[in-house]
Image 1 (tube, rainbow, N blue to C red):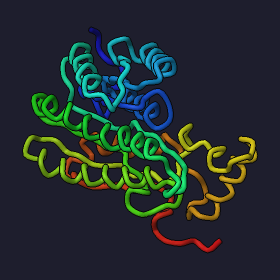
Image 2 (image 1 turned 90 degrees about the vertical axis):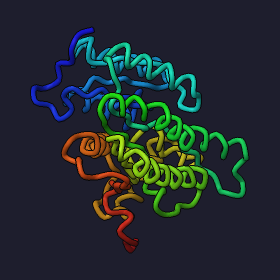
Image 3 (image 1 turned 60 degrees about the vertical axis):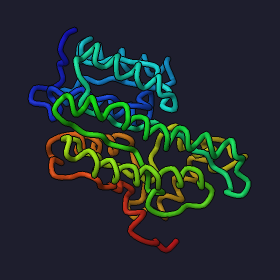
Image 4 (image 1 turned 30 degrees about the vertical axis):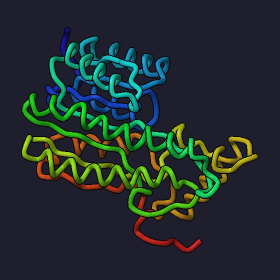
Length: 273
């Protein structure tokens, strides 16, 4: 099976963590950082080509025993069962999960088709629920561990034109708190990361500014964030990954049931334009 060869004394030495949505964006950066910190990582996604490529790069860097990629649709309970089985087969246990997979759709609430609203719920909300359900028993059997759910800045406030997304992220915060209460006695800590605007493929600025070419859209959105975000910029996925690392490692050993906002100060209040 081989051993991971992340840096000596890594913060996740001996841990086995499943990361969903690991083919790109925040999930990719979480998988890369966790492997670097000594964890054995199961990368899971529905984007098989980029997911496999990331896993291959990590295997080359840290050894074939450090990572495994699986196709995992987070809305399917049988995919979760297969993913957990693959992790146990490759690494012997599961003691961590980053429920990162999610989708974002921009639409005025009253014009959102029911099918679109339900699709966002299936991936963001039910996907997180199924992940908790699938891994909790395994983490308990491994002697305890952590679950980190990806919520959002919009899980703690409102934002126009992302009604379905905001509703699901509020739900993820609620799931996080309930799971933390129910699983604490089993040695499982459950927390949520709540990113603001982060520069990932999911937040493609071209989708924010219909009819604008990507370069113009990027410039427009970057200018908007410079005004709205106190730190004056969009976030980077590796910054979110570092927060997920903190919540997965022993540095956060007395923290559970909490949403952690990482948004450059956006939620702190209104910045005059």
